Image (cartoon, rainbow, N blue to C red; front, top):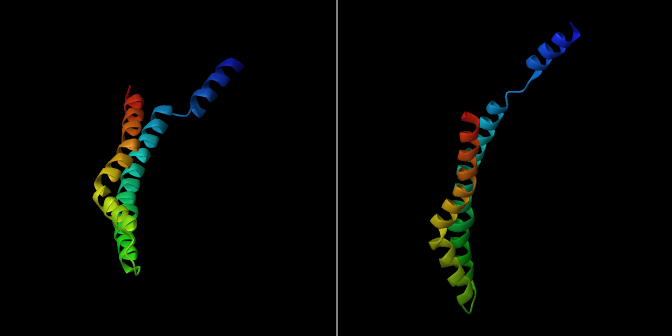
Length: 100
């Protein structure tokens, strides 16, 4: 009798791991979107513009600062997509494994 009670308690307290995997996968995809937008817009685009302005304000223009600022602005989309894909691919894999 105690064995049946233990099995019933285990089934009641069992965590649904497929639901946990699904939630983790969705959170990974959402964090990929947020981090991709943050890196692309704030760090690369706005940071590149600020760096470009600061390099031009110096009395002798800092050509290295201008070049790096322009490079940051140009590579905005690429860096945002890379950050997004770094979290999107494992997120999709986690969701697929939870649906099996």
